[in-house]
Image (cartoon, rainbow, N blue to C red; front, side):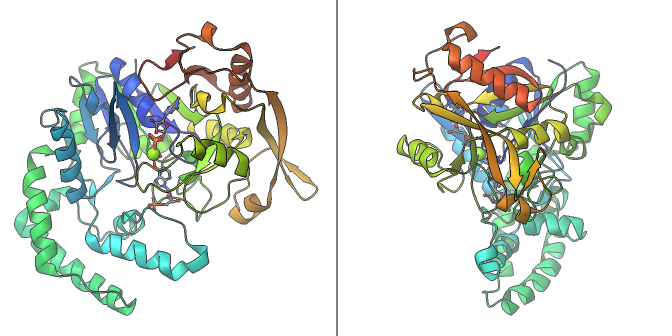
Length: 422
Ligand code: GDP
Ligand code: IMO
Ligand code: MG
């Protein structure tokens, strides 16, 4: 398959987990490179649903190796729970999961600070997942973070934790929050550290050895392009580089070894949390929620829904270098008579064909729409391009063309067999 980076081309939850699971068949190693357990990637295998948060979605293919790269922030207690959850469902994890020793550790004070900062922001809150992601990446950048290599070394971990907890407890007290107990945090994290020790390794060397054996790597993006710390709708973003460049820094695999970028996008748009979403629309939100769809895989929050935004996805093609597109949830539009697609924004009298960097400007932009006739036919049983209604094919071709990349996959349901290679 060659080395492939898969990214979300919208605001996250595009169906990356499902597409990773499908593409893993052709890969040898699947690598998460950014984010933490703020991610929720859903995979259905037959009637069994799996939601992965830190572990790559490739884990459901038993012969493949899964790597949590250095760019990920790992909540060790969360990871232990996730491993145990998979083991209970009969998924083999012990032999095919490796965690980078330089991945940073999410600590309870990160989660507490995440929550407190949201309270302080009041109506300007980001709507984070409260998993401590922002504060953990903040510590990494400030060079005061603890890494997996520290966690699995009891003496070193105790010493570093004691220093960091002292400072953070002062901050928490100043914010009116309860300080954390050193003893309790230490005990909890030591147990997780002991459990995780056999999984921790130098993943940069491991990935380069795999490449020298001719193995193919699949990089699993988390979140989406517009949640990227640099390229998203700042400050309504996450704290990592979710875009394709993050796959290099977050894994230690250099740019010239990357062969292809796949962008995953829904046939419409969703966003969970605060921040601008130009095509947000109450009717399509009600329709999808009424079908029991578009509730967050991590927090259970109802996702905000809107029409497909090709200004945004075109921007995503640009910053990620997307070659191939996987369009998911086509079936979500099966009952819609007139399907709208945003082709430009209007900011007052100005027409914009790109995403403005100022979230306040984006928030006041009004979409310019092109309308498409709906196909009004169920698509979830279609097994090939030919079996899709002609109007659905036209719609897919149009959104791919507007996005500026090649249509590669159309997904008509959450299952493996509901995947059409174009
Ligand atoms: P991710 O974070 O990008 O992996 O996406 P999520 O798992 O958070 O959300 C995507 C949701 O859409 C999940 O519930 C998937 O099972 C579901 N899904 C993915 N592709 C399709 C599709 O083509 N049709 C339908 N009906 N559901 C899909
Ligand atoms: P996957 O990988 C959708 C959103 C949060 C919030 C913002 C910042 O499943 O697509 P954070 O907790 O990261 O500090 O929150 O980012 N967010 C996601 N939205 N899908 C995700 O991951 C997300 N991860 C974070 O809702 O708006
Ligand atoms: Mg998700």
